Length: 112
Length: 111
Image 1 (tube, each protein chain N blue to C red):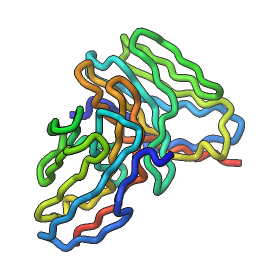
Image 2: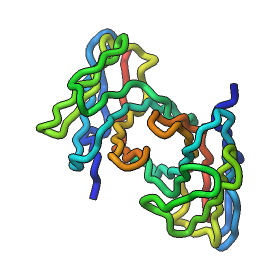
Image 3: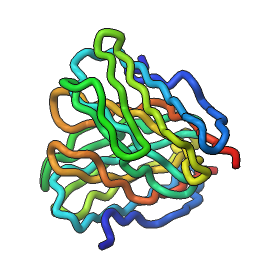
Image 4: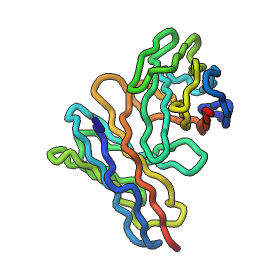
């Protein structure tokens, strides 16, 4: 039972255009959502997060949108750069403790 | 500024062998975690700890054991390695309400 799903395993986008990554969840008790970025042979690194009481959070080129009624969040990267090529994981935190449940990841390729 | 350090980076084990994956953090985080990532899959929680002396099972604990004798260290023990344990293992740490800092991972192959 996958509580956090990223239905697109890969995404290819031209440099300078927008990348949109999607994530769906099933557990309405999740109260905090995060995006992590992972390069090969490295651990995931924190990118951006959003609390369940907000619907948007922005940090430079990265914006995360949360639609609680649809149990859906998305990450927008504008403009996309070649250095953004990586695997992106969506994660959600339950109300009890600080355990994160991760989605399967989306591999992004930004073409120059 | 080391963060989370995992050793070894790579290891090949034979079926039935045992080993310990080491994890240490220098950020004084109370919470520590072990995840595994199988090819093309997300990260699955094996064990976690909310402080020294306290550990609990995650989603996929079978075949593993952990201990937390100090705040800094959270080793993961594999007993009787099986091919199904071939994976990349990530250790992470956090404060109680913050995002995680991950180590760079241990790639384990069981043959």
